[in-house]
Amino acid sequence: MLWKKIDILLSILLTENISFGTMTSAKYKIVLISASLLILSHYARSQSNTCNSSQNGNWNTLSSWGCGSIPKDGALSGWSREYIYINHEIYIADNATIDLRDSEVIELVITSGHTLTFRPNAKLLLPENAQITIQNGGTIHAEDANSDNLILMGNSGIAGTDLFSSGTGVWGESCGCYSGDVTGPKTLDKFTSASTLPVALLYFNAESNHTKVQLKWETERETNFNYFEVERSSDNMYFSKLTTVQGMGNDHLPKKYYYNDLTPSEGYTYYRLKMIDFDEKYYYSPVVTISPTLSPSAYIYPKINKSTDQWMLYTSHEFKNATIHFMQMNGKLTKTLFLHSNQNNTLSLHELQPGMYTVTISIDNHQFTDKIIIQ
Image 1 (tube, rainbow, N blue to C red):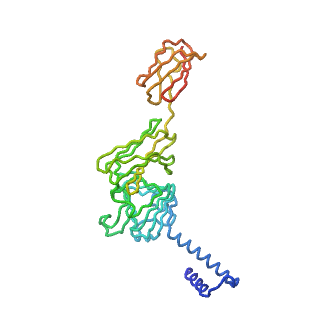
Image 2: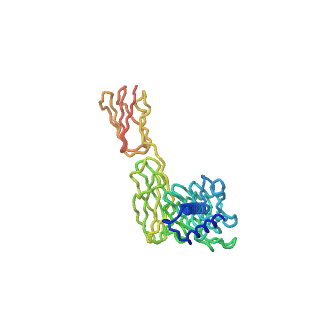
Image 3: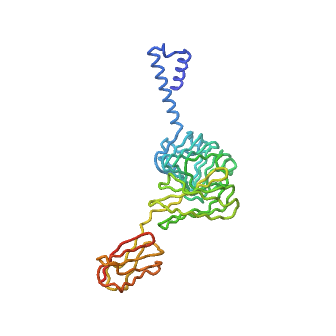
């Protein structure tokens, strides 16, 4: 009723063709009040069409949402909002299906820095013309990319019939679509993905040996595929390109790829593949993580020993070459040992006289200092 009165009031003002130059004080106030009410009306209506997440949690839990209801079941539950915003860490539980195909949802937005996680066999069904907007740093994540996950755009159809007879799968193993992490900026709708990706990625992993990170991946199939971009991030939000790796061909034969990151970060490091086809469409692999590693170390054990033939060199990592210098406290070099592997690190020091020695250990590109006492 309030909105109807505002519309009538504005209609009267407009039909009188009042100019601001000749407007009386009372009429001027009426115009200002009317304009303010219209702004409030637009804001209220926009808010009533939006549902925002309110805290981290399960999609199917009321406390996860700030709009007083759970976005699900569409017309069956009377849920009729047009926009859903994921502003927290929200997950769809194992084997759960969120069916909004009969709703009025226009857009699902995953905002920057937040994630919508699909636990094993979770499904999200949206109206045919809806879209998912993933902002920069937002993510769709599958806990198990090989499980029966699905995002589908379509009509509800007839209960019990095949989902794909009245809808288009855009993500997830259930539709044969890409099922790994999708990181924004990215938009998904019924036109932006195909049921079969140009690349079937068998695995993508990373291994660290303290001086480099080796990335390995293998494809089962490449169709209309051009190249990979290897990307790295320190926060799992903002990725930068390390290099480009050209695809090997268009066929169904397995292909293995390798890349060495020779300047890895010291903290947590995240890697992913951007897979780009000849049509300039692209998809992302799941993200792999390298954890921080301890700094290399090396020392002689024991520190004090009566025997000159029971000393050991201990190292935290494998090495190719090691050089060990023994110096008396006056700085005189008395012995040097060379080791070419750490298969046998027993040291014979029978030439050394009792006393304290400074030991300098050079291993590959690292140098360590230690002290021992021979009694």
